[in-house]
Length: 374
Image (cartoon, rainbow, N blue to C red; front, side, top):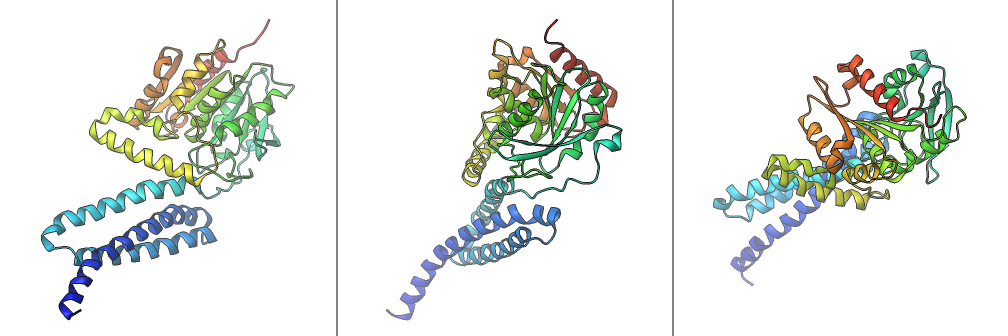
């Protein structure tokens, strides 16, 4: 083979080599970005954060090398198409695989130093098993009115983040179980940012409250924020013992929950397609069972002979939350109370409208968890 033939062969091989390097680089980069930033921010220079940083650096190097190989093997007149395609491929890999890795392998947030005593609440330290045997840690404030709720925090936080909400509820006599989700705070297990373990964790909370002598049968509810709100809705769909749910900032756990994106037309359809890929990747990366959609859980829980009552809260400053509340309510909309909190950011209802939040939530719980018998 003469020199010209070798040059032609090398030119034809260059784009393929670049594509392979680019694909491998995007895979490594997405995993590194999914692991590195959050673990470094929460845990500092721990092994997972450092691993993510190294993977991200290696991924960047491979992507750049591969992109250069692809461009050198592509006629310049096609660069106007090739460069945008490379950018879109990078964006999609980070948004799908990067998001899936971040959700499936989150860092463990510390509990912090605040306790119910800081808000003048008497409490006891408790440990209880989830439905699948994972030991969960929490605080319990005893009931004075015969009813109780489990208070479920959002992803990346712990029970300390809902202390103010607990103080409001306990002030009206409700027993309050503040529980660290698995993989958060002092609870055992592996965390999962989309709350796919929520049904199992919530079942353990309901088991605990059902055995309390200060809690009357049939007077147990769930109050959750963000991930905790989604867990509360999901738990109500599978556990008939949940008489009432207050969920604030609950939007989605799987792609099936994102039907409200149809309001955005083509852009929403594209986002839904991306979410389907992300959900599929999460399912591969976590042993957690994929839950039913929030909409289906509400439909199931409100369709029983003794239906669960729902109060869904949305942030006035986050338009998607109002759309999500309407979508999640589905065919049960007439049976579901909703409130869009003016001026509130995500899960900021209590801080934005403290008096109204207290009035609405307590009134709802009083009506839903009232005395079960004469």
